[in-house]
Length: 115
Length: 115
Image (cartoon, rainbow over all chains, first blue to last red; front, side, top):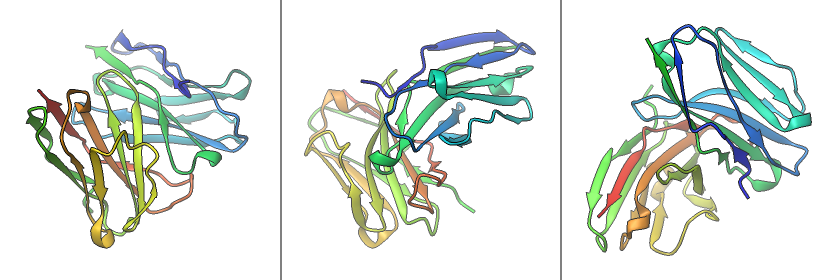
């Protein structure tokens, strides 16, 4: 069974619109970490954020914000006032204390911001 | 400071041939990881080195894959003989910390196409 589900395969928005990328995870561990990575056209995976399972506070960083809800096992990512440079594939990932140092990634959401 | 570098960026080979992918982690990072993304699917863990030792190779698909990290610096991943289903993007990542709080730094990936 997939531990991280990103149901949205592709999303297109017009510049300046807000967009939310969904991430649902599955784990039996009480200690785990959630991550978001951005993969721009150049290919590398760029770290965006890490949250641990004991910290449900939402986080905002500029135009980016993350909503972590343990009750629904979700860790959604919102981009406010999207820009063309936000176009990329975004991956959500999970690491569990019981699984060593493995990251479990979702299938990614390809975001296209249209000028 | 140089990031994680991978070579080649793209390799096209025929079924049955051998390919060797190379990863140079960030200098000083003892932890090195290999991941793979088959087209449209999630990024999957292959293995984890701590210095020159294999800490976890539970994600290696079969014995056609051989990873080495002699001297604890760069790593190679050899596929021999390559099969069609080996096509995908192979990512290397490194981190300074072994625990789950450490950020993983990814390279740009090596795209392998097996014809």
